[in-house]
Amino acid sequence: MRRMSVFGAFAVLFAVAYVVLCSTTVCAVSVQTPSAQTPSAQTPSAQTPSAQTPSAQTPGSGGRCNPGYGLRSYNGRNACVRCNPGYNYTKYNNKDACVRCNPGYNYTRYNGRDACVRCNPGYNYTKYNNKDACVRCNPGYNYTRYNGRDACVRCNPGYSYTRYNGRDACVR
Image (cartoon, rainbow, N blue to C red; front, side, top):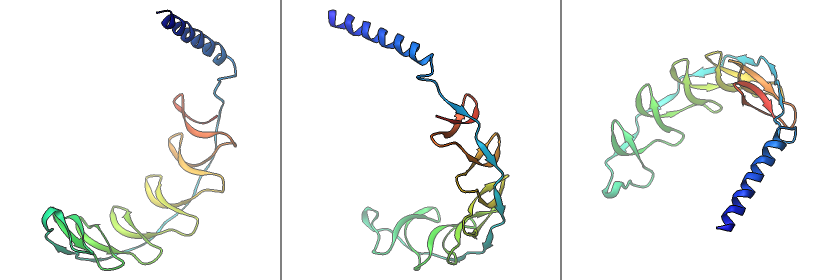
């Protein structure tokens, strides 16, 4: 019983010390306003992908597929599916298909349709002002939402960008 009261006293003493210390600058959070810039944005280059119907087989016992086939959902049922080399199995125009993009292009949704998209070097494909775009920030800046808009944001060394007390801030 004496051990419990010693532990309890220690816990109370620790809590009081924490409150006293954290009311000073020892535990205080340092908050700064981030540096923000408008990103550079470009329209991506888009192409129609090459699409093929996959080769499909009924799975064997235990859901096993022959070599080179993968167990997937195909036309609403489980099937062993294979695409030709260079093609990837995915949804294309709301149908299961094997899709291939030209080198340097990535398969994605673009302006509400399936497409192969490429950005210039140094740009990343993302949403910018609610539109699909290729976006680039200056070195040291990161693309994010800042005060309700898309922006390139940088914090001073040792600070991290986050939401703090209901606002966007650099916090250490």
